[in-house]
Image (cartoon, rainbow, N blue to C red):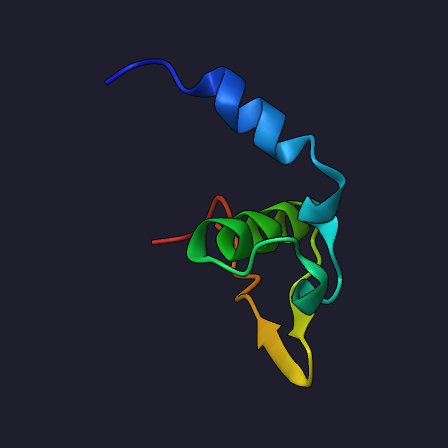
Length: 67
């Protein structure tokens, strides 16, 4: 497999990755939806809309005491 790091960086630099309502994304496909959710999750934003639908990403994080 080749190095896709430049593709990934170019993708995450796009302004629509941080779209609050994903109905406004240029492309409503799995790749764009997941990238937007991941970018928002990285910013600790766990709620995202797709029109009237609300998506919640589990904010679970590991701690030093996790088993």
